[in-house]
Length: 475
Image (cartoon, rainbow, N blue to C red):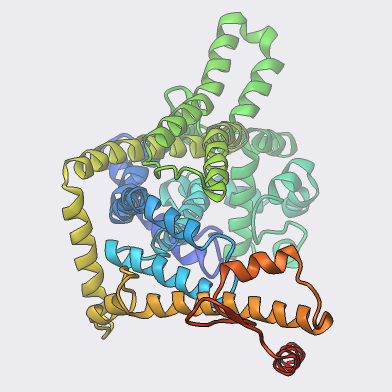
């Protein structure tokens, strides 16, 4: 009966199924090392992390490939942005969009490719957190360590009221999704129900040492059961002298509270054990960031400068944030981040060397061919896509048409301004600004004759232009 109990797992419609799949993998890994006589949660987390990142390797390769090609595309994209800088009319925006799309098409890269890969990875990473932070819910051997304590505790008269009213367990239940010690289902439901037993195991797991002490204080005859459970959990969770179920900050506080009893050298060792994982997490994250391929910085672009500054700040903050979270979360999460950063660093070194050895033109060709095959599977002719997004704006085509429309829109706007000025000041002298505008264009309110002399536009024509302008603005 004990082995059929399913602890409280994540029920989120998106993360829940992913967490259950990852939980099956974690359970299989722990069972495997248990058979080898090495039942250790820390080792299971490391093997689990390696397996996950091996499965995610194709996404990692695509992300690295995108970064590599982005570094090559960056100057071309910057030139396009500079070309249409300050032009906000529709034709110019369409032309800029078409030329940008053409660059991505030529390199065989999707404009949203990197975002899609990150979107795919994010739910997996969040689900990983759910599994590692609530191991008894997914690993059956760890769950079994809470028996027969749970059954014997629930057999005690008033035990559920004790758990619901005790401050230690109340605090523990706040961090457990879906479990409420004050609910009628827990207080009055059948003792053998999954919900009741799952809730007790979850709060005992979360409360850890202080929770076990409270149980012994209330029910001294359960001291043996508490000792068996606590001994098994310590055996599973002890990784190189570090209890990975305990946050490093709690380790530091506990060591300081008993400093008079343990002496200076043991205190020093306890401090080192508490800070080693957060420090390793920050160091490995920093190395990982340095190994990531960086896009080439475009010179003279304010937007690119801002993006580079933001990325630099993020790259500095990430290791610091990693160390902070590792202090406050169970050490097992820190161990996962350390193992993940090490695996990613190794992957990046290998992938970077692979791409560095490749001919860049060949890489672009392969990327373009792969994208063409994807378009063909969707029933889209890649040749038509390339033709519609022709990069050479000097040839007649979509881009040339759009550019011509952009110039016409600018000329039309100038003509409208001249017409308004002429209607307000008929027969008057032109301002310096109007003369400058007229010097820069051959279309608008005045036309040029073959001999170079300008023909004046009649007052009636100007009035009609003003009327048309006002009618357009009313729409």
